[in-house]
Image 1: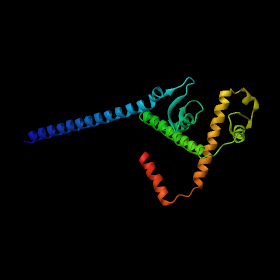
Image 2: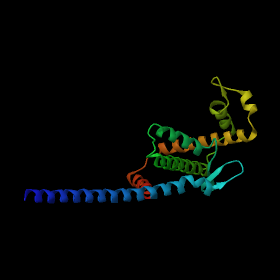
Image 3: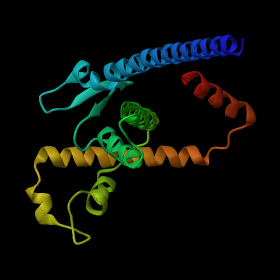
Image 4: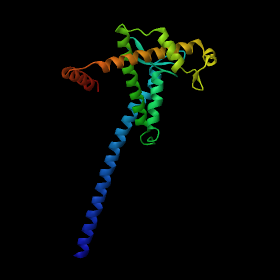
Length: 206
């Protein structure tokens, strides 16, 4: 009797192990499918994006536009700098398991930041506010990529191409527009209804 009971218990234990293995296999298969779907979305969105985006002859990629202003990705653009800055924040936490997800987060956040900045600059320009040439000249001297030993270098400036100079001036001009927009925005006192309105918009966008 004891032997028969023991065999019965052994069969029951074996069946439980088989059921557990099947359950784990089913769970792993489900997770595998979900992982594949996520990876496909990431690849299509951010690996395929440069292929699907509008390309120009100078290696500039256009990812879209806001109110006629193109959202571009090229060496030196705000979008480009955002990708590199945000990627640096993830550098110590990236691994083989989360690499694709972090890539998605980096590009998505960089694009969103660029879009918000583009919208702010567009609104500021349409408000009638103008950035003077002298203000841009001052930014070129103080914050342009022509510094040597902490001071503006005329030699470096003269060696730069006209295209680079124009790109630098355009970017610094946009920085001034964006700074003015943020300054004005911080100076505005919103009532409760207005705060709720903008909060609801943000929730809807998400």
